Amino acid sequence: MRCKKSLNLALLLSFSLLVSVIGCGSDKKNPLVPDIPLDELQAAPLSIQLGDQDYTLETELWRDFMPIAPPGGHPLTALIRVIEQNGEPISADLKAEYLWVLKGDEIWATIFSAETPPLSPQNELHKIARGGPLWETGIEVDAVVGLRLDHGPLELLRAPNQLIARTD
Image (cartoon, rainbow, N blue to C red; front, side, top):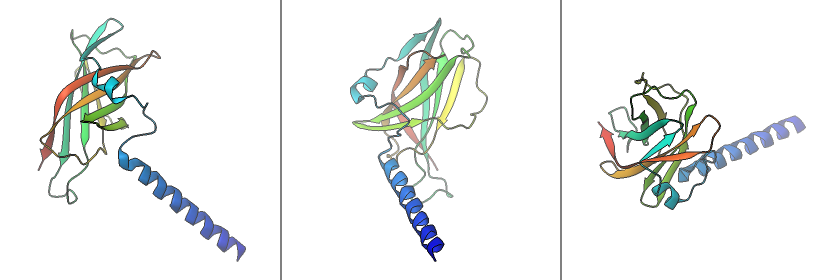
């Protein structure tokens, strides 16, 4: 009898933990992402030099409303492309670690998924982030990526006025 009560208590605690973890994700701020103030994200440069390479950022942002999507559509997905502006191959030491998408004073802060995006040109680094907010489509937002060269400091790179598209 004591084992059954212990098992029930363990299940209840596990369920409570799961509910609290799910609930914590509702504001779309990931605890694995540095908490950078909104004004610093908004002031991130549109191009940066890391090592001897110059980089800019392009994005594709969308929400999926295909017939198999749930009512109201899927959450925001982001494909980012960090582009070396001189056509040189991207440094093997360059890492895209974090993504912030800014809608007014709202921030979606996330890490990138482990999936491998389709093949990209040698002068581009592609990453995907999924599970974003349910923001409306047809609006423009700013995207900021956190880059690091080898083990150097985190550098921010911004792409302003990025359209959230809709797939039907």
